[in-house]
Structure formats: C-alpha cells, structure tokens
Length: 227
Length: 74
Image (tube, rainbow over all chains, first blue to last red; front, side):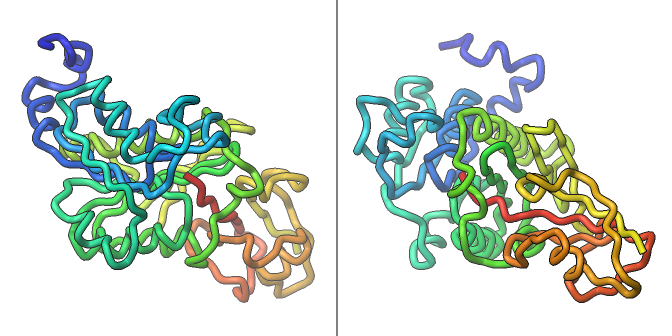
C-alpha cells in the first residue's frame, strides 16, 4: 500500500516515516488508554509494538476500550491488539504478551524498546515501570485518567517524576469512584502518542519535568512544572 | 490571615477551583486541608508557590497552595 502514509507527509518526512518503521514501542496495558495508543501508533507505522496485558475483555470495557467488541468478550486484551492491528496495518509487528507486568518479568519484557507507554491502571505498577525504565535507560510516557480528569507527562530515565506525582505508591486514584467515559482515554492516549512520536523523532517540545493536568469538566488545562 | 488555595480535579467538587482561606497566624497546609475537609491521603501533589511543599510548612500570606488528588486509572 504505497499511499498509506500519504496524509502523514505534511508533518512527517519520508525519512521520518522510514525511521518510525525501525522503532519498537512497548505498551503496558491494553485497556482504555492502551487500546487507543496501539491503534494510533499502528496507524503511524511504528515497526514493532509489544502489547502487554494479562486481562481479558468483559462487558464493562465496552463503554471506552477501543479493542473491546461484543464478540470478543473473554478474549485476551493483548491478543486482540494483535488481531486489530493485523486488520488495520499488517506491516506493523505486534507482539502480544498475555501476562501482567510483574517485578520478576519487567526487565525481560521491557528491554530492547525505544519508548515505553504507561497505560496501566494502578499506582504501584507505575512505580515499577518507572524503576525498570530507569534501569534500562528507556523514556516512559505516563498517562492517567479518572472521570473528567487526566494527567500526562514524559519521564526520562532518572528523573523519577512519579515520585512528585504520587505521595503514596499504592492505590488506583479516583478511577474506582469516578469511572471512565469514552472520551478521556481517547484524549490522553492521543497526547501520549504525540509524546512518543516526538521522542522517536527527537524533535518538538516534550512534557518533560512537567505534567499536563486536564480537567475536561471545567475545560482547564494546567501545566505543572516540577522543579 | 488569608491564603490562596488552588484545587484540582476531584478536590474541586463542592469546593470550587480557587479559594481564599482565612486562618490564624502561623498557618500550615495541614490546617488548610483540615478546614476544607480533605483527607491527607487524597492529596497526591502539594505545591506551595509551584514548588513541592509539605503539610507542616508554615505559610506566608503571599503563598499560593495547590492541591492535587491522585489520578491513577488507565
């Protein structure tokens, strides 16, 4: 398909499109955020996507998780990511990992990637991601959502920005009481993908040492600088 | 003394975005969250004048306190 990336070329050069095809991105979590992140990175033509999630789809995912369908309930989220991308962009290699990320498997699963995307739904696992990404020297693009609210930032190895975002390493933070609608994960996933592309192409301004705090209910977008 | 407080995300619900809180002399951030009925564990980020702050820090009247709850879903 010669024209697949034609509409990208006003903002990405042919050389950059070719560069993206050589890159490997790991997406941890294939739910609300992860489904949209995988979709967008795949359509941009990233060479390899590793999709990590030990969960299966259930009916409560249908309101927001792009990869969930009425006819794939009970199926592996990671495997469905591979199925989806085979239908959308078969040039992209998707490696499904049908296990949760743990302290034991994190180093082995995350190594050899250019960027890691945090699409998890717990605070403890995010700290494990930050620690492992730091040890591997890989940038981590953080995103978190709860109802109308969301946060996005990019964490370069060693910056440990999560230490400033969460006082406690435990809990889930708001999502359980607020739930998540369809539009918040889509918005945050878009911003995470934008950060990933800038990291991969080494251009543009990153949300580095600063976090975008989003309040869609009051339409407030605050940039919080971590000094 | 009045201290300017900025609230974010769920902490705004029933309280508003930006408040002036009246406190006795030598107020701390702990006194602010107590007055606003915010639990300590519901504060994930605490900034005083844009810098990382602490609950026991004594505030000046020109200080601006910003409070953020944890957001952890995905």
